[in-house]
Length: 219
Image 1 (tube, rainbow, N blue to C red):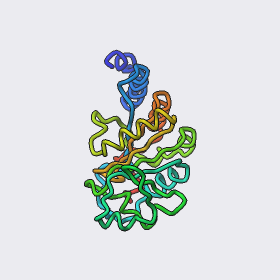
Image 2: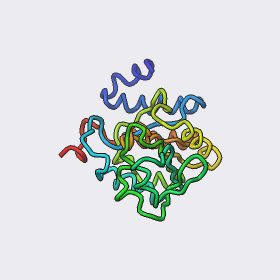
Image 3: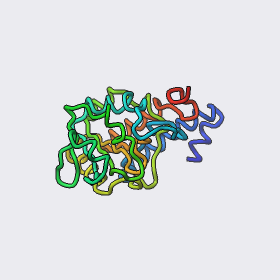
Image 4: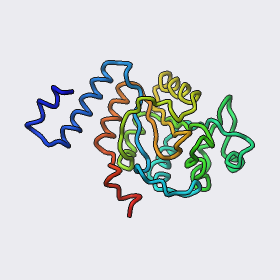
């Protein structure tokens, strides 16, 4: 990393150095194989927590709606039958093994905002699977924030959901999108095969917004 900085230091601005180094380093790590298998983007800007769990948010239509229109499957983990949240969603869910499958032929966002916004493990992780080319065409990263990589991506997620997600990504060559059990709609993890993940991450680095200059949630 130091050698890269030295090469560019006298030729370009500090902001451009950060962008170039991020892409170069991530590309290198991915080529190295097993070090990275995910990245994440915020779906609402950092610091924006002034919303209700049943509130409609811009992310629902700008991101989630587009993803679900192209999705092959969507699963919800960790829903407990004795909760109000589960009772609100029974008409769009069907049980399959240790999770619930979302009926994508029905409206699953409007009127079900709490399912997506719920935090604090009121539900488990939510998984959406779709084909890589379809995801690329959606350009959803233009409505996301601050792409990055977590040292512990399993934190705040249902362990069974992560295992299942990685298995589907490997076997079916799909992109897996994971919505947090602990933080709800606040961010989304992206899982894909190595080359696809690299391409998506580089795209997110270029297209995503910065929380510090948000104009969607901050008037």
